[in-house]
Image (cartoon, rainbow, N blue to C red; front, side, top):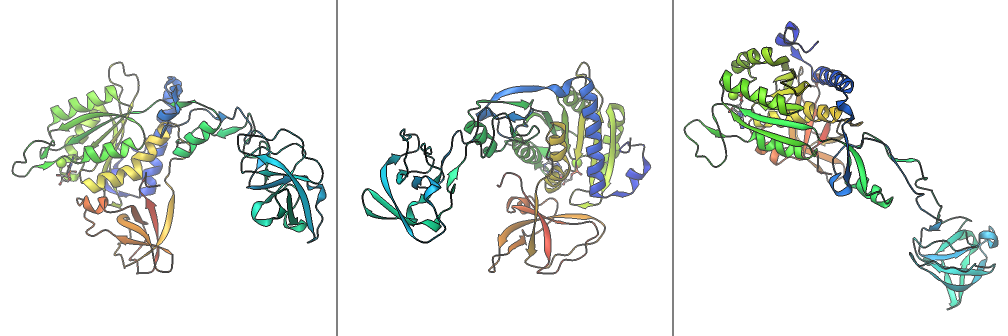
Length: 436
Ligand code: AMP
Ligand code: MG
C-alpha cells in the first residue's frame, strides 16, 4: 500500500496535504470494503430524535406525509376564488363571510363574490384558490373587502399540498450528518425515530514523559496534558463513543501495551506526541509489529510529522483499527484533526459529505508565507466597514500556542504554492466546526 512504512518516498520527502488526504481516504475505502465483507458496515441502530444529533443517517428518510398536508395560506389576508380577477386596476369588492385560523379551518364553501379572512397556515377553504394579503386591501365596512384586481394573480399566496415534499419521497438522504434542521424536519413529518450508523468507537491517548494529568502538581519540566481534552471536544462534535486511554509514558513496553489495548476496543485510535523526528524511531518500531503504519512528513504548518495506517486485529476484535499518530504540539493536533481525522471518521461512518465548507475573506494585514507547504493560520472572520468579509490573525502562530486557536473562529488556509499575502488579498477560510 502507498502509505506503507516501507515506502522510502514517504519517509524522506514532504507529502503535499492533498496527497495525504487522498491516501487517507483511499485507505478508509479499503477498510470499509473489508468491513462490508465482515458485515460490520451494516451496523445500524434506531434512535429517538433527541439522540440523533450529529449521527449519520443510515437509510433515506422517506416522508410518510405530504408537506404541506393540504393547500393553505402563505399570508395573513383574504381568500377568494380567482375567477373574479381581471388585469385592470379596477377595485373588486367581496363580501366577507368569516375567518379561518391555523388549526381551525372554515368548513363551508365560499361562493362567488365572497371572501374569507384567513391567517397564515390556515387551510384554504372550499371554493378558494387565491389570497390577497391584508395590507393590499381596504374595507368600506366590516363586511366588505376591496382591492385592485391587478395586485394579485390567481393562485398567489397559497401553498399547495405536497409543495415542499411528497409522501414517499426522500426527505433526508442516507449519509447525512444530522444537524438541528434535519432533526426538526423529521419531527415535522411525525417521525420519532431515525435509523443511524452506530457510533464509532474512538480511543485517544497522549504520549510523553513530560505530561501530567489535571489535578497533579507540575514538577520541573512537566506540562499538563491538554491534547486529550481538545481531542475530546473535537470528537464530541461528532457524537462518537470516546475511549480515553490516558497518558502513556515514552517507553516501548507501556506504549505497545496501550496500543494493543486500544486496538482491541476501538475502531479508531488517535494518539498525540511521539511521532516527531527524535521520537518516531521508537514508535515506528512498535508500529511495525502492530500494523501497517506510515510515518509522514507532511508539507504543512503546523503539523508536519504524522503517522497514519491500520493496526492488526487484536484477539477476537476481528477488525483492523484505523490509526492516527498526530504530532504532540497542541495546535498541530487540532489542525491535523480538522484536516485529516475528521473527514476520515465521517467517511468511515458512512457520511456522504466529509469536507467542511470553505469561504473566502480579505486579509486585513499582510501574511508571510513560504511556498512549498500548506499553512493553517488561526484567525477571526469578521466584516470590514464596506461590509466585505475580513480575516485577522490571532497573534503568535507558534504550533504550541493554544491561545491562537482559542481566540480564533477559523483557519486561514494558505495553499502549498502560495507566497506572501498582501493586505487586501482574498484568502481561503475554513470556519471551525460547530460555530454555525
Ligand atoms: P512531540 O510530538 O511528542 O515531540 O511533542 C511536541 C511538543 O508538544 C512538545 O513540546 C510536547 O511537550 C508537547 N506535547 C506533546 N503532547 C502533549 C499533550 N498531550 N498536551 C500538551 N502538550 C503536549
Ligand atoms: Mg513527546
